Image (cartoon, rainbow, N blue to C red):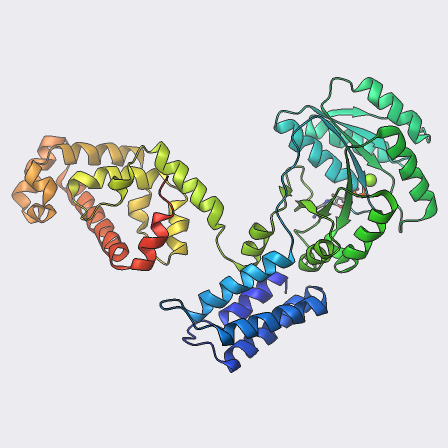
Length: 432
Ligand SMILES: Nc1nc2c(ncn2[C@@H]2O[C@H](COP(=O)(O)OP(=O)(O)O)[C@@H](O)[C@H]2O)c(=O)[nH]1
Ligand SMILES: [Mg+2]
């Protein structure tokens, strides 16, 4: 069972709990400890965390209208976020990056991912082949550089790393970001240590980034510390978080070692690289929707749909406001997720209208009288439906279909209007 699954299982235990008593929180904590420890998170940290949760949960009164589950989930989210470190923002300027790490940690793959990352954001990049130990390291990096569409420099069969670096710097003058791949070992020994020193001395990197495989779990922290004392790291990239149940252990250990996590690798493909953000990571583990990105997406969509906030907050849904609403809702793919996160199941019909249908609805509404637009109940009359169908060049069936959609949406609006909690959440989504 992976960490996320374990955490969600623990949280699920709280479903339906209306109060947090000692028994509830202890059972929850037991499940939580099991999940975190089996994900290799440091036992000491786990105990601290669960103690904190228990103290807070028993001391503080559950705020009105908040379920025990939401309350504890939120607290757990805050604590885990703290445990997992901060978010990272890369320097987007010309620079030299040196990648270090043990065998199989994912250095070479990550070098190509990084080069692609920077180049896609306007900084032309190139890879330098300085792994002089592993057979075929040169070819592997060259192939990856081609795949990523970035520059490449290496000297086949050359073992003098200084010579390679000098050649690279001369040959790659037009590239803004230079990323140097290096040799690995099973452990950081003297030989590797000396070689890395030589590379660093010649290359003069702005960033020295350690690549660690998430499978190493708790050992990740020790590795980070060792490399840090050898070469003074500027950051860490944790790879293989896609497959590892020990991701939580690796991340918390690296954070505890006080070496910032910059990116995470989430797959073998070159686009499987994500900026590290503990909030995002923890939200995902807990199965909470990524609210921040959701809010940003929805705000953007509302802006694009050109809907004024007051239009979104109509008191009463009628046919004058229906079309704007529908149009706005349609442009908001993410809205569906947002609704789901607020516990409203939005009618699919209201959110997934085709272009054709939207045009038809517009002409149907245009064919209504002002009174009909204000008071939808007038459309209960089949004579009116017939007239509107004729006026808008649609069939009566199509008019009725629209009325049905309208009614579904009205129901959804009623639900939102009557639920203060939902309304409060909804207001977060309005562009400022
Ligand atoms: N699933 C997964 N595989 C990865 C990731 N990063 C690297 N790998 C794989 O791990 C293996 C070793 O990677 P490599 O870059 O050669 O490691 P190096 O020895 O440190 O240079 C390769 O098969 C990669 O495809 C990752 O984030 N997720
Ligand atoms: Mg390699």
